[in-house]
Length: 424
Image (cartoon, rainbow, N blue to C red; front, side, top):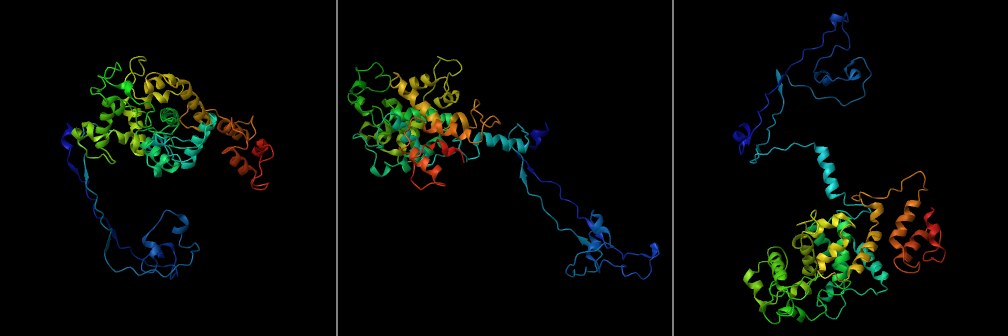
């Protein structure tokens, strides 16, 4: 077979033959009845005669020509050789399959997959610190809670990691690593870890964990709790509250093969209870967030309840939008705790992300580019979706109002009704 014969061989294109150009003779105008003409030029006098082009003006020796510097005289050689170019060696693929694609179509498809990395849509790009902070503040505002971050008394994450900058950094690393790329995937993911981490106040379960001890829980033995004290030791940890010895050891073995402090630890070391490596999941910001991504995209899979979802990870189920929102909560928590709250956060996050208006991957995106609307109506819808429920003197809405009013008013003046700010 042709491809079998070529497979693995080096392809060397045939080298082009050296082309030779004959020396041009002086132009003889006598055949045109022109004698002793000043235009009877030789190639030595006019470099242009050696390089005839398809331009009729350039080819007309009687046409006015722009002033140029005096060209160099051609050497009296019979031939002029073109510089030889060697073709690079290319190795033929070793696979049996050959694929053909249009390069422009391929680039456009990659744009759909990976996005342009810019714009209001949050697909396929990192969140900025300000964007993450705005998400945090607005969800907190919906419950009339303060702005404290990772501030619960049981949270052992170092104080220098208890910042929006660090939390955003680890969130972005996790979404990139685990393919949590589209807006709707991020919306679902945040709504779950926000609740599981007690609204980003801790990485450790509040309960003492004795309820997970052998003989105290029906799943204890199945999930690796065979020694008294395993319950408190392997209670919920990380921003997805990874629970049970079996689950935590499986994650630690995975993490030890990647990056971080645990890299290089052996399975035996990780399984030894006295080493207490499970604490990294709750007490280290990187592992607290990374374990959530691992659970979301790698570990937890759908059962047989919905045939179309069977075996799929949570990250894939999230692409169905609202359809399986309660099922996602059940897979995360098991007992369904906080379903109504998670659903509420999900709705708030969709508004903050302006999902219905700007997400490039939302098939039901609402198009407001219509001649029936004034140009600024689109922004009213978007701003309303993002800031509804907030009082105009509250942050971050207050700052947004000031921004709109700056051109015509004093900085800081937000006393006038701000709806008119859109007409500008």
